[in-house]
Length: 233
Ligand SMILES: C[S@@+](CC[C@H](N)C(=O)[O-])C[C@H]1O[C@@H](n2cnc3c(N)ncnc32)[C@H](O)[C@@H]1O
Image (cartoon, rainbow, N blue to C red; front, side, top):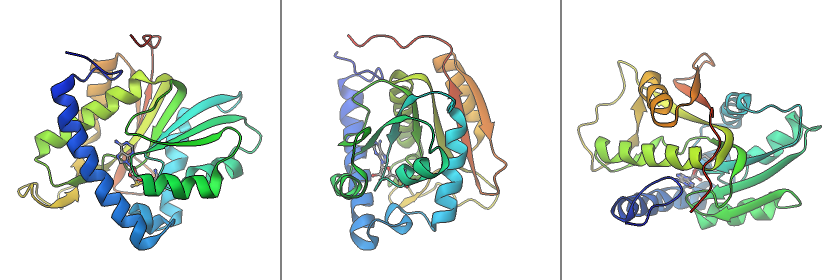
């Protein structure tokens, strides 16, 4: 069977494509309803959207130029954040989103030299770093097991296309988290840091930092690569 950069075979690939298509429908409806605003990417406000970016960007060494893949870039909100916060650092940015409606809004607002956007569910290039804010959160109606297969595949794709490492956030499971009994409805995927930190350490031989102290019911993983990227076949 043919394998992709992330290592998924054709059968896995068609399940992933089905999930991606439902995720696309969910977020495309969101942005159609609320426009290029935090609500349009299912966040409650700009302040918490930015707080997530702060955590994710702790991955990057901003003392020298670097390339960055933003997986699930939405309408491109990370771009003005980078311009404000890291104004003196040269960042070759690529925003990737499976929703065409998101990418067309992102392009209209922010496309320019070193700021490109593509419609895709994985990065077409290897960059120094990848970040993903919110792509694992909304399980669009799948059994927990199927959603976790999807999460593993997305992590593998990020690992395969990140020279130095990647960062990703999750909703943290708490005692009052909603139960996972009804897979037929869209809901938040809650989890605990240890599960995915251990997975990344084991599957990618990576060094993982967990950030969980930023005042939200979420956590961020900074996954540092310890071995070179394998060239694509
Ligand atoms: C919660 S929104 C966050 C958008 C943006 N990261 C931000 O913080 O403003 C998640 C975005 O990721 C996109 N997305 C979800 N899963 C994806 C995947 N596997 N590949 C590419 N984009 C994805 C959705 O279409 C949506 O625009």
